[in-house]
Image (cartoon, rainbow, N blue to C red; front, side):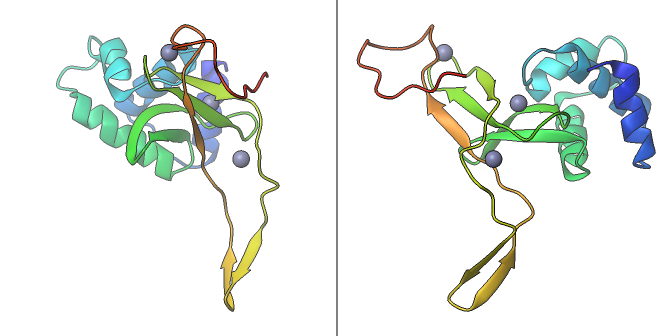
Length: 149
Ligand SMILES: [Zn+2]
Ligand SMILES: [Zn+2]
Ligand SMILES: [Zn+2]
């Protein structure tokens, strides 16, 4: 997505753009796939003196809370980030090379409310990561079911 459009979208939401957040967002715009805080840091450290991987990670998480970026988990850890643009989708995590791929589909017909044992829940979203091996890491031919997209 074009950087200017992303910055406009962020401003329209009333989110304050510090030079650091701006640099982080432009790094996210440039990347074709989800990136880690370390990868973002490598791209912007020459622009911003005194930035650390921790600061970048903290900013990315704050932007995830604000709904500007998506935090992608592997297990309990947040491992990658991408811009919150386009359609809702899920991610495939390769267990061997740890690359993360966007899967442009959703296996759920997501309900907006659920009732369990008399408790009602209002559903606002869900996240799901799919694990396995990418085509470069696939250990053997006996791959079970594959999803083609
Ligand atoms: Zn792989
Ligand atoms: Zn994605
Ligand atoms: Zn989904």
